[in-house]
Length: 201
Image (cartoon, rainbow, N blue to C red; front, side, top):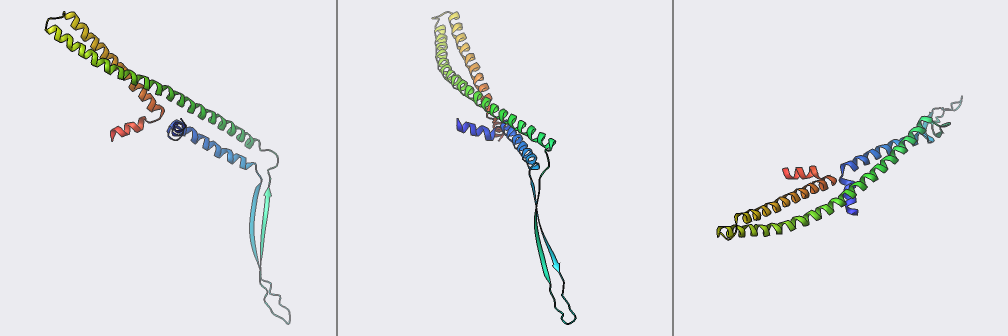
């Protein structure tokens, strides 16, 4: 079941869509939270000093470069009401999406478990019908031979073929039920489009 859960998380579009929505809300939430933090401003500067220091008797060159660096912190004063509201709304939306995601995943897993049981039971029914069809077909052939030999009445022959027809119709219904359950199963796994593309190829 863990492998199935991982498959659903990575392949089912409805779950992937919720994942994307959660990711977008997390981005917004991080942005709003950063707006309420202290901000750091780091700057570097350089200033050239061309003072040659000339006197009446001495002429010399004294060139230097003065480097400066500064760190400035800015802290928001008070509470930004709008930003605070945005944080709370984003947190609530994220919580809701997490709940929706978990519920969606549980629903899909539950439906798949039911469909697996249905598919197994209908498969067993189909196998049983295949054996019954062989028997009723043999009985119909024997009834036809007996009728041709004038050993039985036509009503007996008709009954034999009616039974054969009823069993075959029951098999068709069971096979249809199996295909419907299989379609629902593939739909839960989000493989319908993939199967359609595979058949075209």
